[in-house]
Length: 75
Image 1 (cartoon, rainbow, N blue to C red):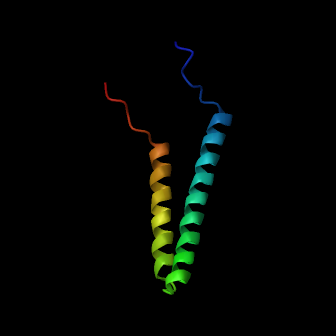
Image 2 (cartoon, rainbow, N blue to C red; image 1 turned 90 degrees about the vertical axis):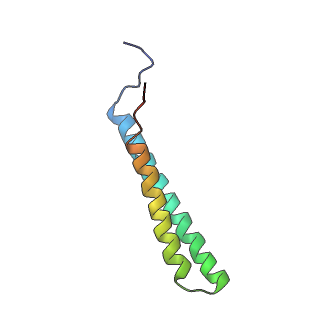
């Protein structure tokens, strides 16, 4: 057994999933805040807010699922 293999302890899992939650929150908040500012700048009230919010949610979900289910190594 190699010593370089990562051990899956409860603390490591907690840190991993809490980091994923913060990453999702930051992406969604930044996308929503940016799209609200874009709506105010272009004077198009809910258009970019809705599109930007949904797009940021989709990006956050994609990145989280990509981290949750890593690709299998092909040998």
